[in-house]
Image (cartoon, rainbow, N blue to C red; front, side, top):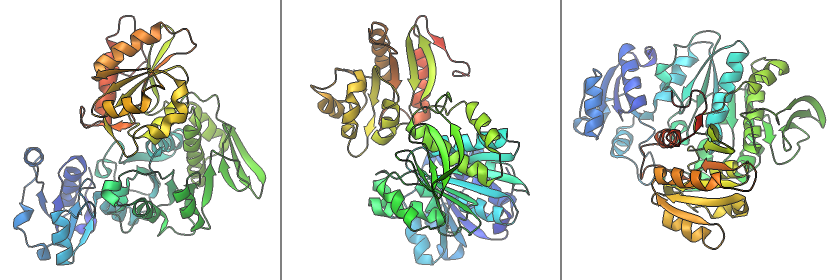
Length: 464
C-alpha cells in the first residue's frame, strides 16, 4: 500500500468496495484526500468498515461538492444503463475515474514505466509471461491490475521500476489519461456486450489504449481478427502480430517459430514449439507480445528465450494439474467463452471435455469444427441443456450437473480410452457465476475433486 498523493486535499466519492475499491480508498486517505466511500451491498460495506474505512451513504451526498467519482470497474458506466452514481456525477459535471487512472497519475510523476495489456482473450497469460520474462531478465517489475494484486497494493512507483498491468475494457473506460510506454492489444471478439452495447463500442474502448501514446512508445497489436486489424490500420507506428500468417513486417509465429521481420528480412527468431507452458497458437501470440515488450525494455533475445522456457504458465489457463496413468488432467477454468475454450480444444486430441456454466452469446456453436477432437463431453451448470442440443448426434455427452460428478465420470471414461494421450479438460466456455463466485474458485474446486481420485498424481504446487 502506498499513498495516492495526486488527489491530496480533494474530496472524492468512492463507489464499489471490493478488492480494488478498498485498496484505492485507503491509498487516497494516505495521500491526504477526503474520501466518501460507499457500496450498495451491505456485506461490502461491513467488510470496508472492518478494514477501518469510514462509510458515507453517497445517495445523500451532493455530488457538486465532490472533485471526482472513483467508480469500481464492475459498475455500469454506459450500458445497459448508467449507474445512479454515474448519473449524479455527470449532472454535477465531475470526472468519473477508476483506481487504475489514479495509479497512472501517480506513475506520471516518476520515471517508472507502464506496460499495459488488453484484449478479449490472452491478456492474463501475456501479462504473467511479460512479468516473468522481465523479472528473469533482471529488471525491477511489478505485475497486477485486472490480474493478481490491485494497483495500490503494488510497490510505490520509483525510477527504474516497470509495471505490467492487465487492463479490462471496464478499467480503460475509466482511464482518460492512460499513456503506456508499451501498449498491447491481443485480440477482440464479442464479449461484455451487455456493458458496451455493441462490438464497435467495445473495440473503441480497447483502442483508447493507444490514443495518447508517445512516438517513443511501443504499440503491439494482434491483426488476426477484423476489429484489431482495423485498430492497427489507424496506428502507423504500431507493430503487427500474427499467428495465422507470416508477416513481412512485424512479429509472427504461425508454425511455432517466432520471427521478427523488417521489410521481409528476418532479424530475430525463437523456436517456441518445445516450450512447456507455451503450447498452441494462442500461446505463440502471447510469446510474440512478450518478446516485443521485452525488446522494447532492452532485453536480449537469449535472455527472452531462456525466460520463456522457464515460464510456469498461468493458473487456470491450460494448466496441467495431475496425471492418472496415461490420462492428463488440465485446468482451463479461465476459458469463460467459446473463443477462449477454442484455444484448449485445438491444443489436444482425445479430449474428455467438462463444459458449462453461464453461457456467453453464441454458446459453443463456434467450436463445431473442433468437435471431432472430443471423445465425450460432461455438461454442468445452467448451460448444460443448451450445450446438449448443440452436441446431440455429433458428440457423445453426459449430463452431470455438478463439477464433482463430471470429474468422476470423465476420469472413469478416460481411463478406458484406447486412443493415445487422453486428456480430461475443464474448459467450460462459460462464466462460473451459476455455481462458483469466479473462475479461480471453479478451477480450485476442479483441482480439489481431481485430487480425491484414487491413484492420482498431482503436479507440484497445485494445491498449495
